[in-house]
Image (cartoon, rainbow, N blue to C red; front, side):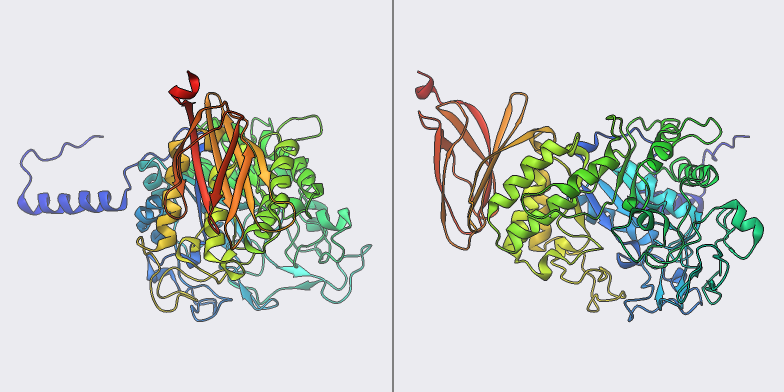
Length: 569
């Protein structure tokens, strides 16, 4: 039944309405829950660890299980979904077009065996409930709508490999009789077992639970080179799901389709993908069960035709090797070339980026990585790239700020979806420090400074990427790379009629860029960007060469224009 508003509202009613409308506008709640998929190649993702980002609702901080203490890095600090929502101006101002959040699902709040809390979100006890520390399902919806109102998108971190730590074999294990010697984590809080079916069938001592085979009844991994242990044993004592079970497969499909349908999620990042057989993702994403469809089919029912799911495969290659990159590609594509996950985090590129920009290795290492990246991966444009995250040291823990700026410019100009880990733009050196004053490691002050030099630098680089399609869709070709020590790295990117040139000097002294540009004689190089100062305009010489001095730690970008008139004549 519809109700009409009063034609002449009272002053009190009108004032209340104005307050409500102002509040809705301020929080940006007016957007739709479901929106079409973007072209992910053109997106820039901001990755926020929800508990450490901002506390928008202090009332949900302490759930009374001894799990909350912002003075203790092991415990919840108080960040929540409301905090994320109220900081969207800050995130959008940085140039991000999507927000990646850590898993919002109900977690194991306190594991007394590990002496650690599940503040990070990766220890699920219920895959379809929101953790009480973070808010409610409506809070996720509000965040989703607020992002969509800005033309932005929501990326949710998910876990398919495991739940929290509710049982294990810390002392002895009998593979033939796994119910012997098992230790139940009875002091786990808030529950001693998952509360969602079928994941609640986790008691190996129970004949019916054993027969259900929801879990692998196995101890912690001892040998990571053993494929069976990698796929079937417990990672860090976290209860390993039997992802080859049709019951588990259906439950996981249903659980995560829920977040797309009910919360308006636009993409998934899949945690610990390397600990699940690659074939699992054929079913998870592409399954055709009408009652429990694969994730991509579920997303299409909400209008998302290009739903992105990218996985985490923590594999870093040695210089001039691509063993891990090829392993990563098996999760993106099946042996016959069919897509599995839509992308994978580009850990090999991260490793080479760190080596060259932060640790002074020769740029030839990074040049080779770029070339191998384009050869090994069928779609490097949809592989998220990064320079630090929640599982590795901050870039600034070992690299300089000048090196950080170069690394940021590189991921903004190469194929891949750039990911900015929260706090990088504020110069963080601690891996999981808080952005808000009341959280762990914040130093007692908020860190949402839009005038901070790194914030402004990152925003300017994001603007560069968005302004030129060649940086989001182009194909790179390395032109020069110092082979023996820090120095010059230069590459072009080409997309249709557009060509760009990007050059760095990783040395702490001036270097000379002298290259065969591959461009037509007389081509004008119009300056687009320089980390410091202004990139000089240049014209390609008659022999196609380009010579340019580069200051220490320089990073510059140009766009190629038509040959100068006098050269053409």
